[in-house]
View 1: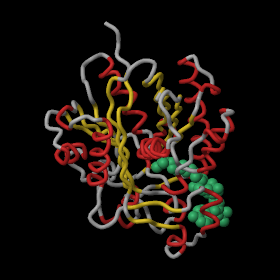
View 2: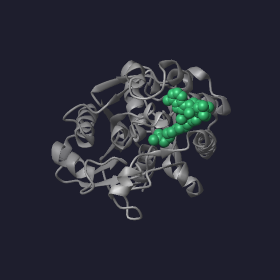
View 3: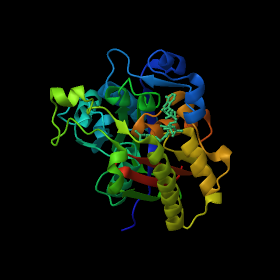
Length: 328
Ligand code: ACO
């Protein structure tokens, strides 16, 4: 039996409704608009407003993706949410999304891989469609990093944002679809980006809270170098596996962690700068949502067209990293 081609049938996006500018941050920590723009590329970011949470963003993005795909919620076989900031510790955020959209026949679970969640999800889930086990899978990548940010730490609070990007996966006609993908993890660099408290090793306690162990701890400088190398290496890996070269790529859609990381990856890959998509300027870093939300934006702008070859590359806590090569 011939395996089916699997691709993205429709995308949705919902960012936090509250706009937080660099000028706003100047009032919170010792920083400046000039420093943030030069060192990160970010002009403003979106965070949760009152009444919003992971499930409200994820559900809104999911509904839009279903509409754009022309797929009904009851046709969905699996609802998978990638998040490190769930609606609540139990149950999975996917259960809240499933209830809100009425995907009543679906299985539902969360995938915890930090920023590479979307690339990990498409890599492990798309074969389930290609072998015919499932017809439609809804992937929602949703992170609300403002809820795990130490707002007194200028090294992290200027970077992070809240948002959701959703994609309906299903069969697409050849030659379109996911051409290649790769996922990896480097566990020897776990300490570069972690939340040490609030788990079984350091359960919540007054001490954990007082030490701020329940917030993101990041060694940004060291992580920067690991990010550039891992995103470049895994991009070359998928290109080689697919038998393509970087010249075949129409758009590079990297995880939006820092504009200088994107520039360095584009330089190492020798990809034209204008092919590298930048959304961090207006969106900040909303973790696993950056790639689907960016795909959504460039499709809406008409920059992403049918049959384009798109290379998505990502990294995050773990240190997990991965890449996807898609013919749109
Ligand atoms: N405003 C002003 N000054 C600052 C700020 C700030 N917001 N943050 C740090 N500084 C200062 C530092 O204290 C330091 O001062 P010092 O020289 O007096 O000690 C100086 O700026 C330089 O600090 P560096 O850490 O060397 O700055 P760098 O150029 O490396 O930029 C940054 C820091 C932006 C964090 C960068 O390292 C980075 O982007 N790293 C990657 C981080 C990342 O990708 N994280 C997310 C990945 S996972 C996910 O997406 C959830």
